[in-house]
Length: 142
Image 1 (tube, helix red, strand yellow):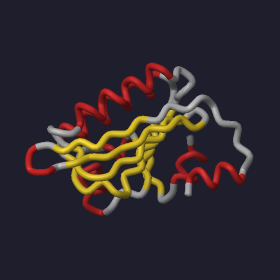
Image 2: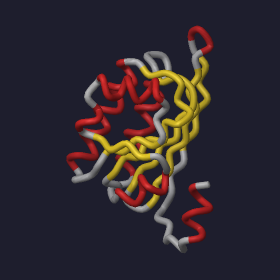
Image 3: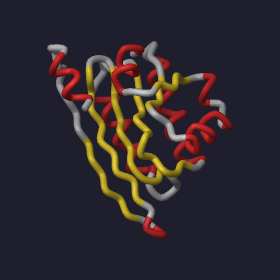
């Protein structure tokens, strides 16, 4: 859906980085994610659980993508399929927020379900991030 939107808008693509992980850990917890660079935004799409067991790989991939793509200012996290997040996941997100903030960018969450949105709000993320309903809206704000 996101790619179709940008193809229809004749967007000039910058060099892309794509990462993917299927990590199964204790209790069968899994996170799958992809990371793309679109313009000045690093767009991470997540599916599954972002917790103590799965977030080290996610952190490493985000850190690597930010280091390789110095033009990136904004971090867009598509969390519509994220089913669980704990303090470890929040810590990873907060750390990457500091990286994009230092570049003058924003943190944007896309389509957080009520449970994830509640956890993010309780942790204070609503003070530092935008919450939007679509990837298109996120990239317009970026």
